[in-house]
Amino acid sequence: MPQQIKFGTDGWRAVIADDYTFENVRRAAHAIANYVHQDEDPSRGILVAYDTRFGSRRFAEITAEAIASSGIRVQLAREITPTPALSYMVKKLGAAGGVMITSSHNPWDWNGVKFKASYGGSASPAIIKKIETLIDAPHVEGKGGSVVEADFKTDYIAAVKAFVDLKMIARGGHKFAVDVMYGAGRGIISDVFKELGVDHLEIHGEIDPLFGGINPEPILPHLRGLQEAVVANHCDAGLATDGDADRIGAVSEDGRLVDAHKCYAVLLEWLLKRKQWPGAITRAFNTTKMLDRIAKAYGRELIEHGIGFKYVADIVLSGKLVLIGGEESGGIGLPRFLPERDGTLNALLLANVMAEEGETMGQLVEDLQEKYGRHCYGRRDLRLTEEVKQSALRRAAAKPVTMGKYKVQRMEDLDGFKFFLDAPTEGNGAEAWVLVRGSGTEPLLRVYSEAASQETVDEILEATLDFVYERATSA
Image (tube, helix red, strand yellow):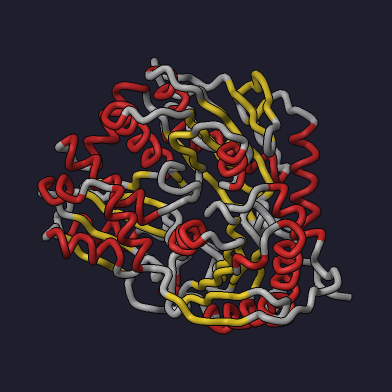
């Protein structure tokens, strides 16, 4: 019996040589080809690109060949390419879609298949569901298919440079450390800074399929190297992109992590204050409520949605004008550029903000905390047996009365189970909450929390772990 292929929040991912095999990649590619034949215009062709992971180039070749066998013309990236570059070129060339061979931020032994829709962004939930139904459907055979190599980076980089204010960045006089985490963003931000004469250094830019022993995800502990580089080289900020360069992370001048929530908040405040572009703001269910406060201060609509950038794309496709949308994991997108997450674009925009405001990264974050209240955040990723995971989710669905020493005031279940707690808000600080959710792409249970102090966040997370594992606690 064939192994199950399930597309999660942004495609299908699996362990290389376990479920992620040449045979299964072909099955996924055939399903995508079938979808294009049924719901898109196959004459517009498909683009295929790949990241720095082990075997990604070969998996991309197999994907291209499988799609071409259905009679579709395929353009295959001639070199390692960031996911946003593929998305940009899908839209620019008017292709029927794009396939990215990547497992984004996952450990080195994973790989995956992302599908980018014709509008140049994450496939909507409806598209993902349709592709899933076509796994193992009879494969369309056709003549006229071909595979040719193409450059997907040059036009994308030019577009990114045109979107940000390069002269402003050059005048800012800031020094940066850039961590590309051994990923597909290697050399891009560094080359822009070099061209502008901006003082900078790049770390982890070499190709290493083992990712230097880290996961290419711009969170702790994987950003320890960037923290050290920023402090050792007296930088004003550290900027990081993940394995396929669609996510952003940052470090302040004193080496502290600036999580994705703060990156989003910094960009949002700047867009509303300086750019004043129209549109609503969207955020995933697991992101900071500081965004709600910023939106309210500027009289903007805020839309909360499920976890995964595909929900942002869905809102944009509905005809809603969206200024910016994002998620907890560092995926932030500006639809006026592209309805897609983009770590490279957002890194340069953060440099743009620093230059225009005349502040370091740490100063920008402190300004937000003073204006909108203290918002602190934490996350735990739990690898559990399916029995323990499902037991925890069932008990969460039953609406517990307390979480540790805190009473549950209300619950929301838009995507997972979020409990609002009676923890102290410390003046104008964040309302305390904790979210329990099974990952859509990995065998994990994730626990997220926000509160007005890091101590309270850590306390809530530990109490929730006790709940997950059904550990007895004393009152």
